Image (cartoon, rainbow, N blue to C red; front, side, top):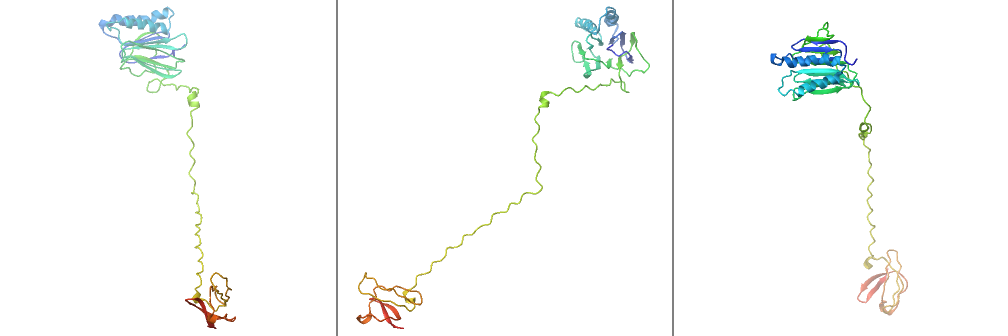
Length: 279
């Protein structure tokens, strides 16, 4: 059986009817709507006697509400098992429904709807709660086996200590392809404990160019030894001395004769370099 067998009425204004697994909750209405209330209550034993299930009950009630152009039918809710194991549920007006099935808790309300609201809740069904506004908490000793009682609703199946239906968590399904292949965030390498020390290359300073020796001045030359020659352009003998040597070009002997070999002091005159005598 899809509907839990133990059904506990909720105290409050209203009516609850049961026949087997078919259940109905509706408000008492007024004297002007007494006929409509009677039609709803009579549907429960009528459908059950014909061997109908919850889907037949929901369609019959939905047809009555759809034909009610004057809005005479009271707030109501019905439920019953479907042949495929689901639970057929309908709510109208201010009535509400909470059903715990295979996918967890399902809530239905038609407060903001012009017509009725219905749904097939996948089984197995573990808890059902149909109620009207102002419903109280069920008594642990109250049970409804069948017939019609004065109550603002009923609860069947598992309950919490406060009387509300306990929700059964939905079973986790297989991971979707998008979640399975979701790219992971790129790993960020941890910072190094100490930065690497870079030793700069030594700066090489180029050596200054070597200074060239200044040419020796003929005046500062030391004792020299030389042999002159007559006429320009003719080569003469080089001089040799103890200091920096200097070549004497175009030297003209004094007195018209070549001096003997020896050391002499040279000085410059208009005619060129001339020996000043022996040293």
